[in-house]
Image 1 (tube, helix red, strand yellow):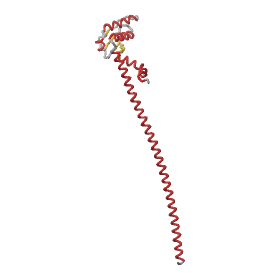
Image 2 (cartoon, helix red, strand yellow; image 1 turned 30 degrees about the vertical axis):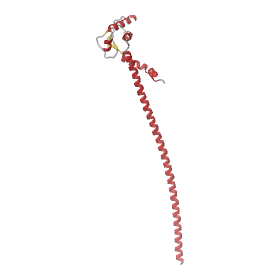
Image 3 (cartoon, rainbow, N blue to C red; image 1 turned 180 degrees about the vertical axis):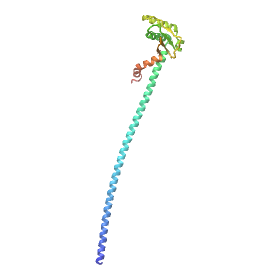
Image 4 (cartoon, rainbow, N blue to C red; image 1 turned 90 degrees about the vertical axis):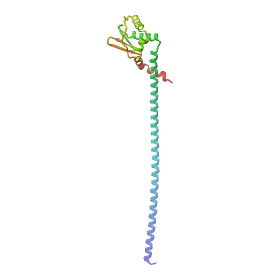
Amino acid sequence: MSGVDRIIQRIREDARSAADGNLEKAREEARGIIKEAEAEALKKRKDMLTRAEAEAEAAKERLIKAARLDARKKELEVKQEIINEAFSRALQKLMNLPEREYLGFLAGMAADLARTGSEEIILGKRDRERLDTEELTAEINRRLSEKGVKGNVTLSGQEADIAGGFILRRGNVEINCSLETLVKTRRGELEAEVIGILFSE
């Protein structure tokens, strides 16, 4: 082998050796890049799972809160219906008192509210038909006389649009003493007590 051939041979070997070294270096770098990429992917996957779990937990909490709020709202609606029913029954009970007791109840209320003793009582249709109106006015006037007030309360020829009770008229002033108004007015004072009775555990 001539000197030139040996030089060429040597150059080829050096080139092959350099190429092999570069290839191995490139492979090593590639392995490092792949390893880093895998670690990054694993970290991202872990981060995504953690974030997804946190979001799922937050969504679950929101759903639970919404369900609790909805349940509370429904519970309050049911309680309100029960309270309404209680006051409605109270009104019915007042309206259906025995006649003598009912007459005494109305007479007592009218005598308490009358100031001059010459007021007018306006009854609703049901009470005009149900009660002895002469007895009612006589009982009101008797109670007024006992208080030292001249009893001259009369029954109006008008009919009030009320379920029970009466309207007390004094000149141009009318006092609504209907049972509906009485129960409605007392409801504000009694509702807390009724709630305590109905829903105490």
